[in-house]
Length: 326
Image (cartoon, rainbow, N blue to C red):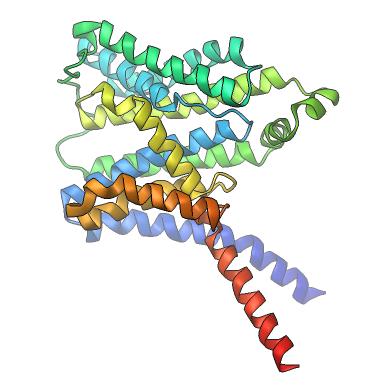
């Protein structure tokens, strides 16, 4: 009995220990990576981990948004315009960018919360296109088609403060999203995705929960976008178009939509790995498409489910050997 309790405690402590180890490794990375370019790649990875995880948070409610990059753009342009043209502190404009994305997400979500599946996806797609048109129409304020420049930086020229800032921000955002998913709210959202009729029959207000999760997901997307604006110092609407959303979706699906770790793995693999073969970077879309096909047909749980697939294969192989031996 005591041995069982000890093993149970060990399993409970294993996951936090692994996460803690990863955070320690990431904290120490700048001591070993001296290249500014590689720090830049890691910073972009951290930003897109937040965005992809927030997309998955919305997806677990059964809503498949095709405008998630647009909400990232709302946060980015809100923060950039307020700091560039009004001279507001970037420490104020970043949270304001996140709040702007959250408010617009909730306002848009209210009339369309009852739409599902392909209908919701299409409406969100048209909204994303509309956001880009508004950005272009605002002329000098947003830089229109030429892009917005002269954005005040968050820190100095060194990328190390940016790396630690985004590492801390990503860790905090993931912690909040993890707690949201594995509390009563997350359970209710998953129940709505499984069957909104059954959820409604037991008193769950489907519309309220869907607006809530959309607002929260847009907040995190806007926060990442606002941080990106004050880091990159140049904004182009191409960074927030439909193709940018498709990449976010790709990160989530390849990493694993059914796993909290999926967006982290997907974004890290598809952003960092191609950098090792920079000469072949033009083929990244084809590699991503091939990975997507492999995931769909071989690993439906995504790359996050690969250890379980290997474990199952090993158990089956071992069972076959035992049956042949007997």
